[in-house]
Image 1 (cartoon, rainbow, N blue to C red):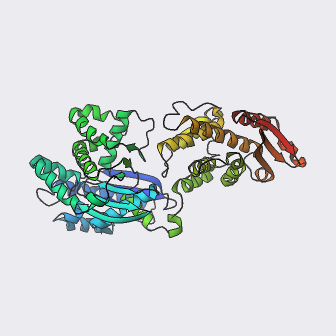
Image 2 (image 1 turned 90 degrees about the horizontal axis):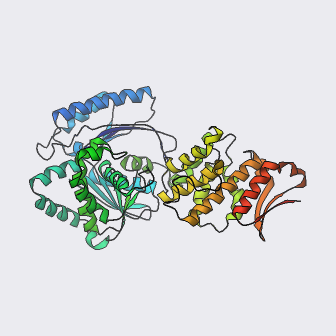
Image 3 (image 1 turned 30 degrees about the vertical axis):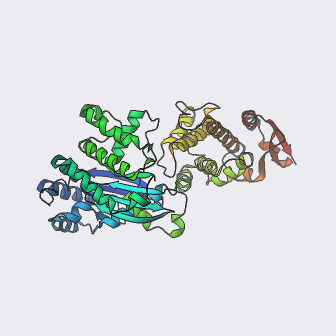
Length: 478
């Protein structure tokens, strides 16, 4: 339960806290912080809407048999003079609410980004309705943490009064970080619904081929362009942007203006969107040290693949079987190949004519983190090929990933398809045969008494992969 200054949200998770799967997600735009700069209190209508939302969410938790509830509140409840009324109502309804202070909120936002992008190094900016949290992250740790009363609802009021005074206030606040000297030129990681909505607009404007917001990257000059673009766009055009919530439209101008100002101040090298934020940071903070180090992409694909496999999951064995012919893969390529093998049996229930498409959607649009847009294309391509897409690039593919990388993903898919065919998805044939590349030959090596495994369907897939690699298919018995 996230009681924010702009929205109140219930998210129900299932599975490993390291890569939580979302079962349910609903928000109510209560606007608790809309009058903080004028009255200092939560408005009466917002209070009523919030209590109504809490009552519904509590009932849903009961019906879903949720076994652990974490409820927290942020800037509006921190600062409002009548916050105790809401907290008392929440307690009566059944929510034990933790009011996060600004530094705690900044730390959790930083942890959320590190959970989703483990290699992230830079500044995390979490824009809410009532406050802006900034955190410096480096080497998988959250370092400096700051919270400022610059939420998008407050910025709107302050800009209407005196934009120049607001600029001076922001500069004064940011100067407290010392980052004008020590943290220039770093990536800036975007957290929060308003900034994610800006990214949706930019994706639409640039013709980005994927509908997935996580790890979408923008060059710093795009922030200023969004300011001018929003000044010209009417609400009807904004409502036509896919994935852009109409409830976020009123805050977009102020969110863009603030982002542009901060990006210039920090001289940010790039802007990267994180799908994870404070909620996921709270989960990540409570996982074991060992689990926190696990690769979120490989763990999530392993769990998802195992749940949908025909037989006990053989994903690691499949990757081990095809790995000898891809010994020159980079570490980055190896993990995408492993992720593909983890999902190597997810489409078998689909109509045979649509298995390639099912695999493609799983790779491209799966709820994965720890993966870039280009890597999603490679994951989708490998699965598309593995489930019968042939040697072709999937329709609309090859835009984000290089041609060379895409061809490699096609080869992964053909090798996976061969491994699945020779084994029927079971373990023993993969353990008792080998795939090898040597001297212009692509060899399948097996004991003589296993020769029956090498049927016509296997031979055809063997030749198909060999041709793609400019090799000759050879069966070796011993």
